[in-house]
Amino acid sequence: MQMLNIAAYKFIALDELPALQAALRDAAHSRALRGTVLLAEEGINLFLAGGGSNIHDFLAWLRSDPRFADLEVKQSWSTAQPFRKLLVKIKPEIIRMDHPAICPAAGRAPSVDAATLKRWLDAGHDDKGRPVVTLDTRNDFEADVGTFRNAIDWRITKFTEFPQALLTHRDELQGKTVVSFCTGGIRCEKAAIFMHESGVDHVFQLDGGILKYFETEGHAHFDGECFVFDERRAVDAALAPKVDVGPLSDSQRLQTMKS
Image (cartoon, one colour):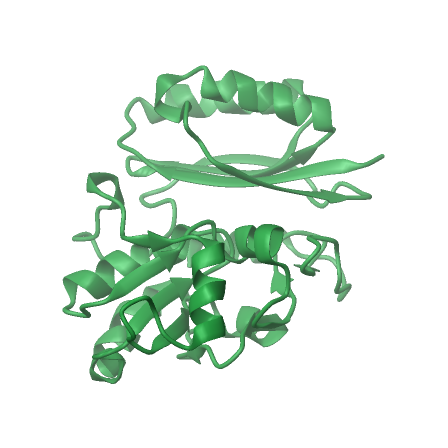
């Protein structure tokens, strides 16, 4: 049976989290969905898989809540269910950075879409003539599976290391247009806000992350595949499973959203 995989997040102020947690768990369970949903006062982050009609029905239910009416979703297909169970958890942050001054719900970081980034990389500079660099905000082992060609990679092992890495390397970014990227957009959005607040002048996030870039621009300027934290382990530019290195443990599957 073909499984539809979805990834989505939204920074938005949420309250009454236990009630929302119970409602989401019931809605996903009743539709035989598996995966992970994280809730925090700053928003929602989810990775789910199930039959196509069940996924679409779940999304229709979720978007009936005005807070999630404009939730943007990345989609891909697999031939098997890539998640072992359904987890709906309440966390202090939907992507842990341990930096309380960062508040994406107060305003998004400037972003570029995939087509704009490809055009800039084709040219080697942005529309104002500044050199463009891509900055990988993911963990080192994710970057090892695939990343943008010549991307800056500070070899962080968890996202909480990013603030110090930026402060160490900040001067190297001056005079350049920096485009932060990650798997689906959540880490690079927080990273872009932090960079802007730390004095890096020309910072953008890649809207929708690598998954959206693959969806619209394919493999251009990207070497390898995109690591994903489910049983597929990685997807290629067609968003098809590419790497099989054995099953993930539950702790590994949660790592990208906790780190």
